[in-house]
Structures are given as structure tokens and as C-alpha cells.
Length: 438
Image 1 (cartoon, helix red, strand yellow):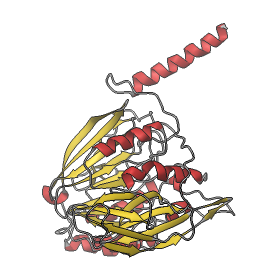
Image 2 (tube, rainbow, N blue to C red; image 1 turned 180 degrees about the horizontal axis):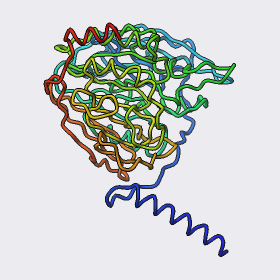
Image 3 (tube, helix red, strand yellow; image 1 turned 30 degrees about the vertical axis):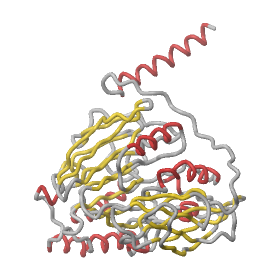
Image 4 (cartoon, rainbow, N blue to C red; image 1 turned 90 degrees about the vertical axis):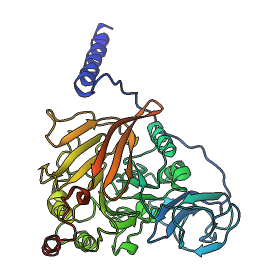
């Protein structure tokens, strides 16, 4: 009994030590929450499930859903009034197998052209529930919700509830979606979990390490991810669903693949150079980039994992005048100054790690001490971010900590674009020379 008490006291001491040395101020972090479990919901085999939407080129949306009925049509009826559909689009469908699992019929249907800043009502497969979506505006302001490393826990649900309360136009997710980790039914439950949000606003995602799901000699990587979450890679000239770009309301967004080859001889590297050379800063004065593994990270978790990609691709983003970089992977939040080549630089990008959406692996509490000169704010808490592009030169960023069941704004900053600050080199002959010779 005495020995047991000593062990308990020792563990309590360790916990208190961590709390004192890591947690800032008088904030007491809520405890972890369990993984969500979804009861079996008997639906008609042709009833649309796991509905989500994504941008698919200028004034178009891709609607994705799953049915258990292999004969269900890949059609979407849509219009601007409830129950009155003035247009119909035909899409495509696929299925995949993974070890002993066989997916339902996965439908991908592109609708449009759509009017800007307009609510549409739509129905998938000719039956089932009616959904509604809202298209992004054509002019500033535009707001992005940002959260990575979501998973399917009670904290995930809290994060999604908080995002649902904000007025946003597009959701950005820098990798690690379902945390299925080869258990394919968890992809289905994730689709069910996010459907209320993902069916009403476009979700633009990139892959993380938990999307790999490669089994040596049995399964290739990213089969589930690529089948379920088709992004506009073809529309942006990419040959891979793991990296692509899109424009929305004055912002050019680039989604890179931390787990696709990225060296100077890779397809991704060549595509990135070509994509950056096509950016028109008059039409899209903001340049935002997302990928999974952070390049600037003062947390002790995942140290150095992004160094090779950073060495290869950071010079391209710097030459092009990237304004903001969002990453995940580290289960905590951190915001930097404008940085380049490992130190502060007024012409570099602001890097934000936001891998704190609610995953089952928990938070990364340990940070390097003292913090690097480029680190402005860091905290190991679950939460989400909101990025409001007010105009072509100014944006407001805020990070909202999940405090119990309340969304608490814990970090905020006004960001001036490189164009607005006079540090921008995009469009210059020197920038084109660097990109074309890199």
C-alpha cells in the first residue's frame, strides 16, 4: 500500500511539474476526451451519405457522397430555392477495396457555373435529404476556417461546433483527417461526423501521415484518401490529388504534399514552379500555402521532419512572396513572425502550426526553451483558427482555444500582405528569373 502511494505521489509530482513548466499563465487545460463511436444507422442502400463539397475550378463545386447501392446514379439536382431544382449535373463514381473492406459507391459530381455569394439547395442521387451550400463571395472580405489533425474525439466535436458558429466561406485542413489508420469504417464515421459542416461550405484538404495507410506488399498509400476526398488537382494542372491550387476571392491557395516527392527533380516541384509563375497578384494579391509537416516548429514533437522539404521549396515560396503558411502534424498551436531561412525576415511568410483540431493522440506539451526569436505565440491546446481577408492588403487572424465547451479567442493579429507592406517581389523580373532557374 505504501509503495502504491509513493508511485501515485510520484506521478502527481510529474503532472504538476509539467503543468507548471509548460502551461502559460493561470490557464488550466481541460482533460482529454474519448474517441467518438457512432451507432449503426440503417439507411436505404441508395440514400446519400457522407456528403461533402469542394471547390472545383472557377464558379464550380464538386459534390461527393457515398451510397451502398451500386446502381445509384451520380447526379446532383440544384437550384436557388428549396425543393426547386433548375439544373442537374451528371458525375462519375468509383469504388475501392482495402484488405477485407469494400467501400460503397463513391460519387463525385461537379455542379456549376454557380453565382457568387449565393445559397444553393441540392439533392444527391435523385433522392434523400436536401442539402444547402453557400458559394464564396467574388470580392473581399472572405473568411477561412482553419483546423488540422481533426480525428474523431469529443474535442473534435467541440472544434467543429465552434467552427459552425463562425461565419466562414471555406474550410482549410492541412492534413490528418479521419485518423482511420487502416480501419476503413473510421473513414465512414468521419464522413458522417463532418457532413453537417462539409456539405454546406467547401472543405479544401491536403494529406497528412495518417492518410498514408500503406501496407507493404498489400496496399498502396493514400487509396482511401484519394478515393473519398477528390480535390481540384486536374483543374490546377497537377497530376496528383496530393498537391493542387485554387483561387477564391483574391486569394491564391496552394496545397502541397508533405508525403509526395518534393525534391528539385520531382513532379511536385516542377508543378509548384509552374503554378507560381501563373499567379496574377492583381487578381489574387494574397498567396496562402498549406501542407502537413511544419518547417518552423519550436515544439519538441516532430523536430526536423520538414527540413528537407523546406530546403527544397522554401526558396520558391519566398521568391513568389508567400504571405501565410499553415501546417499541422504537431498537436499544438504556434504562430511565427515573417520568416525565411530559419530566421525573421520581413519578406518571408508567417507560419502557423494548427494541428490541434481534436485528434485521439493528444496534445504535444513540450516546447524548446527559450523560444526561438521567430516564435511569437505557442500553446498546446485544442482549437481552430479564423482568417478574414478584409481587403487586398490586410487580414485578421485569430486562434480560438477550446476551453471546455466555449470557444475562447487566445491569439490574434492583423497581417499586412507583402503587397501592402511594400516587401512584395511577385510579378518582378527577378522573381520570374529565380523561379525559372530554381
